Length: 157
Image 1 (spheres, rainbow, N blue to C red):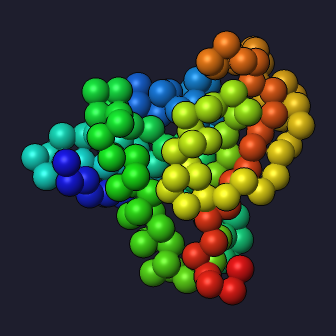
Image 2: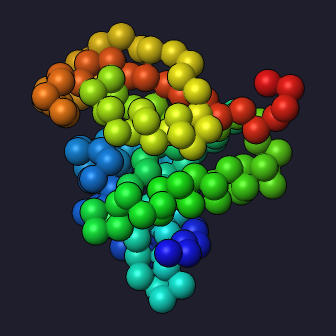
């Protein structure tokens, strides 16, 4: 399945049902959408298969705040293609580092991001306890800590 990314425009509806697959709180999504860029992934047939929210951290660093793939399209390489295209877009903008954060309980996401070229960088203790209103449990594990991963686009990093 070939996937292409298109920048979302303010006049289009926000695909909450898709973004909620990666972040369970619409209020958090609304908050970061207010200062970020939303990209929608489509197949060559025009079917929506994923989304990615990216924000500027600095003049040479971006952060992926949300990466979601339609459930029926998961484990088919869609997420990897989205990452590849975001990396390419970052390179054209002279971005040196691409960051992403996930939870300690997000086993599949930790594997996915590392296979996609990200490296573990920092653990932020109790992030999800301090910033989310309800307990999050994934894979039978309470999500407490944020795991930050980085993809270095510059060879010198």
